Picture 1 (cartoon, rainbow, N blue to C red):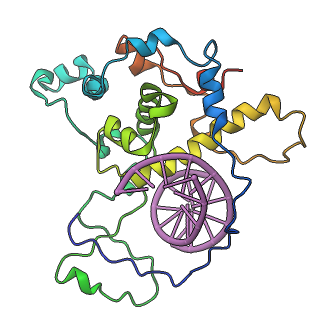
Picture 2 (cartoon, rainbow, N blue to C red; picture 1 turned 90 degrees about the vertical axis):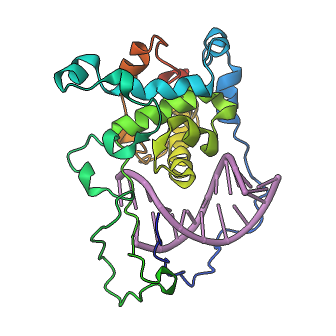
Length: 233
DNA sequence: GCTGTAATAT
DNA sequence: TATATTACAG
């Protein structure tokens, strides 16, 4: 992050959302699912859960021993620390993302982009939107599962995921959608009584029907609470 | 300061 | 459509 270009503040001041949020709901869905115990949580899993420090090595299996051998990579010599997000990009177009790259063409603003005064000689770097690949998402879900319903807050998730360049905002945003997704699953059965939600937004459709299991299983930790588990129908 | 949520922007 | 950003409340 060097001399991040100053993003022009949008003279907005909208705040269209009514100030009073008296009908503010609580996030009971998740808690309810958790409280359901029998279906949502497996206590023994949580008891035996490793600490955050022990979880970081989750990045290890990303390079199968066989593959490492083929490339003459000494796995033992690799630090079990942060995983660069670049390594987790698995989509064909994932190269396009770049928030971690120093330079980027970034040039979508037709307006005369006034060189940020604050950049003073610094190369302006514009953050491209990050791409939540299935790999990244898998790590995300695992982190959420490990942390549990109550502990799965952006800050903790970022820490657990241990992905280079991943910000709290990234995760917060993703988490928000993720929760909507879960909520949708929950309401799928119960909401049958309520008005038929025309065309429910396909949140996370991209990740649908693909609960993480391979890596988790390889870790000998079984499949953590994932979509189905949390949904607990 | 962090979090959750909704609205809105890109 | 997916992700980011913002505002606001707690």
